[in-house]
Image 1 (tube, rainbow, N blue to C red):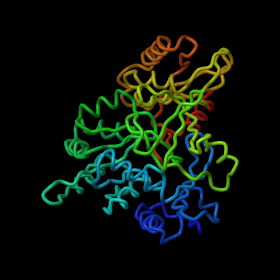
Image 2: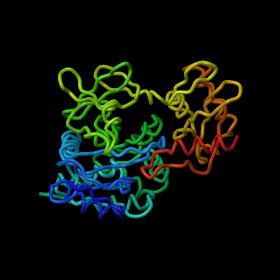
Image 3: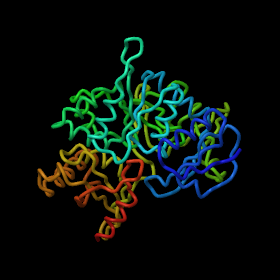
Image 4: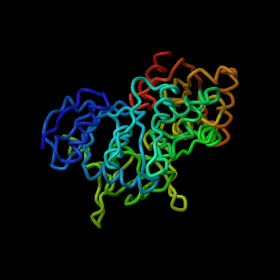
Length: 384
């Protein structure tokens, strides 16, 4: 089966090509860096998504028609059916799934054109109001935490943005962990938020508010979250070794995806604790940067901060907090750092305390909206 690279990132172009790929009438789509990898894919493939991810390691994930549609149908089963607004890049799986859900529901998606701004989001949301049989058609969208935070800031003084946030039946939030403070702000504003967990390898989010979607299974093996179900990718394009290492079969023949995330099941609810490999050794003691970041984000003004590891002459490695200016300006940098260090000390111990707080005008992000952790880490090292 032919793989057709999609050079044009325009979501409408991707939507047209995706319609053919899902219905089997057109070639499979190649999104992202996969445009550099022409070739053939197995029958049933709909999309190959290539992304460098937050660590800078490229991977090309092969997604079948069955996996994508299974994910879309399971989402509708959980939160309901309706009209979707695309506010994320369509070349990444979260944005791609907005288009898939729209096609499966046989509805034209609303598309946010140009750069994301709260005002553009509000204008697009308000154009979606429609009725069928006298009943309002529910609307949905998918965002990353940074977008939600911008909308909440704007909603404090812009009634149109506030109305837009409240207009959605459900707003899916994924891509990274949603800080508790941001979730509380959103709920106070009247937004209906569902936190999602998943990846390109699972056709997008497949665990909503800690509970797997229909057909999805979760197990914890040696502290690692592993997922199974019809939403799994076929593997990695042109990389049999990585596919074999990441997708495993148990004795019963069930195929499991190794997420690389640490987690636990608490009465059937998944609690993700961060990346297993996002660890530094500081003074001979392992420190989970994800755990430190979660604690730091509880400090006022640091809700979207990123914690990275850097070389340290004394301790070998140390953690550094990087945050965008904004709310942080309302309080001194020294006070915020001290509060963050005290919170980490109290929950983990003195060895895990961040060494510095660096304020920047804007955090570097990937096109998907996630923080570009590798670029942020390199910038911090360069400062030293």
